[in-house]
Image 1 (tube, one colour):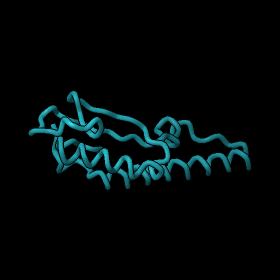
Image 2 (image 1 turned 180 degrees about the horizontal axis):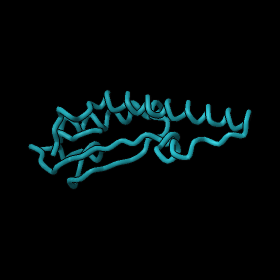
Image 3 (image 1 turned 45 degrees about the horizontal axis):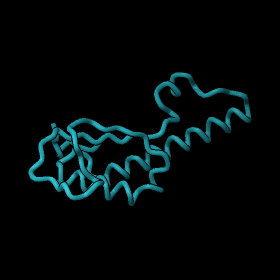
Image 4 (image 1 turned 45 degrees about the vertical axis):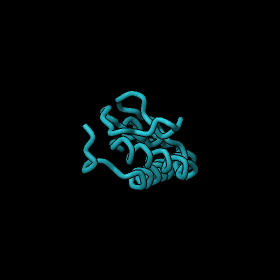
Length: 113
């Protein structure tokens, strides 16, 4: 399941989160500006397709790890699976996220997307 060839590195994932967040904020500001000026609502299809959504981060682990560290209470998995969350203002959390993702990526061969 985990194929680092198709996985993002922690830094790549965070760069992508930043870019997607900024894109959403820019689109929202533009849409609000148009609404204030003309009363035009954003396109329904564009909204449905995620024009204004927070970017999501997905980390997947297949349950196979060669001797993962068990002494820390963070940056570890207890069960195989796919874990997804949205990230608001990723640049504010970058150091924390980079530390956590790096541990999962290195110690568990986690797939990040």
